[in-house]
Length: 333
Image: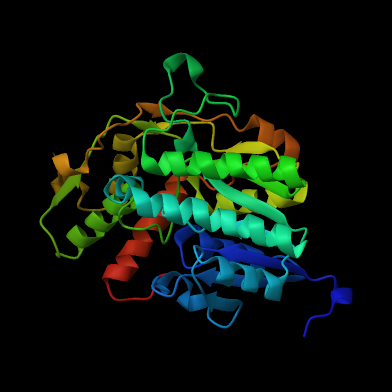
C-alpha cells in the first residue's frame, strides 16, 4: 500500500487503451513519485498498452455507468485526472451521433458528479478539441481561445458541451478543471481511420505487396495544425502543473500544412514513392469541412513554458515505421 506520507501523486487516465492514453502512461512513467491508474471499457482493444502490462494499475469499466465511475473514484481518490476517454473519430459522429453524445458528455458528467459528491479535490484535465471552433472565417485565423464556437459535427458539439460543463463545474463548485483544446495530433499508434495514419498504413501495405500501388484520399486541400502526440501529452501534464483552474488553452504548433503535404512527407520515406498513384475516394469526403484550422497557443505557452519539440518529419517517419512493423507481424510500440 502507498502511504500519503510518501507524497505519491495518483494519476487517473480515462481511455487508457487509446492512442493518446497509451502515450500518457509512457509520459507519466518518466515522472517521479507518480502512481498510474488507467481505465477503459471492457470491449476496447488493449493493443496500445500491451507493452506496458504490469507497469500501471488497469481496470475495465464503463464511463457512462454512474455507479462504476463513483466507485472507481472512491477507490482511487486521484490527485490528477486526465480525461481522455471519448468517441473521437469525427466521421463516426455523423453515423452514430447519439453514441457520441452519450459517451463524451455523460461520461464526463459522471466524473464531475462523483468528484463533487465524494468531496475530492483533484486537478482535472479535459481533452477538448479544436473541432469546437468548427466554421472559422478567414479573418479569424489564427484561432484564439476567444473565437466563437461553431461546431460542424456531432463530435464538435459533444466537445463544446464537455468544455462548457467543465467551465460550469469550476464556477459552481470551484473544481480545479483545466480545459485543453488540442488541435490535430498524430504519431505512432494513431488509429487507422485518421488521415495521416491511414496514409501511412496504405504505404506500408504497398511496400509489403499487400495492396496495389494506389493510395486513396479525401480532400487534399484542407490545412490543419498538427502536433506530435508526445508533445501533446507533455502539454496535458503541464496544464495540471502550471495551468490556472477554470481556464481554457489551445494546444497546437501555430503552423498549418495541407493534407497533400502530409502525404508527400510520408511518401518521401518510401522507395516506392515514384510508383504510387493517388486517387480520390468520394467516401472519404466529409459532409461539411473547414478549409483551414490554424491555432494560436501563445496563451498556454506563456502560462506553462510549453513548446513543441518533435519535428513533423520525425512524427511522420515514426508513424510509418509503426505501420511497417505492425503489418509485418512485429509488435510495434
